[in-house]
Image (tube, rainbow, N blue to C red; front, side):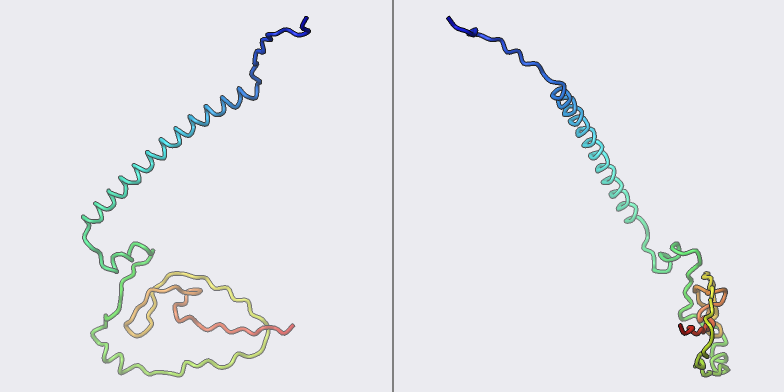
Length: 152
């Protein structure tokens, strides 16, 4: 006589973890489909925007360098190159050059200098104006600032 039955019905019961993985795989599959759809829509939108930009730039008239740079700054960037006042020759003859060499700085205590940077138009030569940054309200070339370093 046999001590064990010849047929045993092994009913497989799914654990909670296998159900979780099946549900997670299903949701991840759906998420990949949704992300793929949005990626496709963004690609199509970028392609349309590029085509629209190419079409509009082909329709525009070419701009010179002064027109292109005019919108990039708060100040108008009008070029004064080659522009001379009517009395330019008389101004040039009246101009007297001077020695711009500075004397050596004297030894002394350290000076703290606060410079504020601003946009301004300055006259760099008689009748010649230039858009520049200014330091503390004085245009380029700025006033000289000398300081001595204290010995330690």
